[in-house]
Image 1 (cartoon, one colour):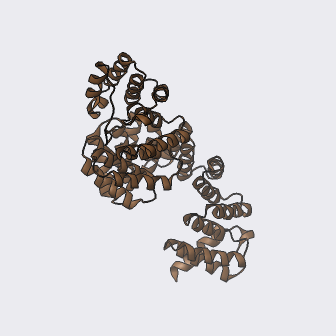
Image 2: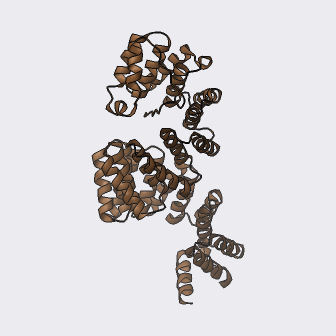
Image 3: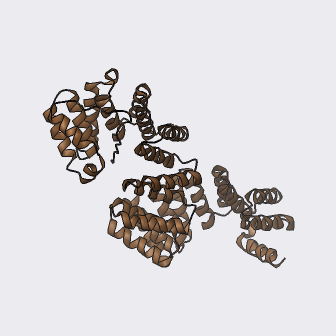
Length: 438
């Protein structure tokens, strides 16, 4: 009983004089609603807050509580309506503005979310949390400079806030400020040694720097701290795959898919792993088909489908998938690279199109400023397809200047020898492994 009385007193203190409860019943329902929130029983909380509002339409804590519950069950538009009503009743409620900003950020209405957070800051300029939330919204909108400024202010207000350091580190990384990003992420981990997200983000930074041992250590630590961290499993699997540890990679992708079955990314990565294992192309195809069902407009998924079908020597389906990938992503490098290689090197003459292969390869190189090794390989293939073998040799040698490509593409030397002998180079079934890194 003491808890209920104490909570009721807090609610009365929060409500302005014009919005005091009309009856003890309304206040009792609000208290019950907040107790349900503490138990994560959002549906029951919504029922209590709704009954309270029916009894007293000016009871601000009921609107804020119901908005919070609705936001948690995914009904963000209804949550926004509740917070808007609370703001109408109390235009000086920083809490209501902040919570409406959170709800708006969930539905991608980032401009209005930022306006709400800004208003909350104007009303309560000492809120580190609000600065941080505005920074997150700005970061999602691509305004990283302003996001960093918000996180910096949050840190000034609360120097022990590990979350603010982590978020600023992520924003710094997006700007390519690697040293600054690592400094912030290191500080986040120092402040909270059990902060799985900070380890994950630092692992991603190390991974992008090709510091694979450090990256694996951080991702493994993130998984140790949070065994349900699907993204960490997926990204660690990608690192294992880059090291050729395909069994470990597959195990991680399996776990990522199990933990997050509605995310197409781990499915696509598992498809890639299975193609590389050259073992179960039917399973690879099932994975990418499931990914396309989840994300039917993703050109990368259709590229993977084309590769899986090509490995099964289903040339008709492979061509259709590559065509769809380019239709969906006319500026997608992978789509142009793989269709170029397919059209130039398919063993079935009926599916070769030398001119289009050259055009696709040229587009892939154009998109990557002639610096991507896989696009350069495609250009070598397309150039050979139109009969220019000296040109093909030139492009392939340029691709081989990339140490990563030279290490990974095991058939490149055989292809080079073929072009030097002025002979075409066709792939067999299964298609050789091939990875494109934009």
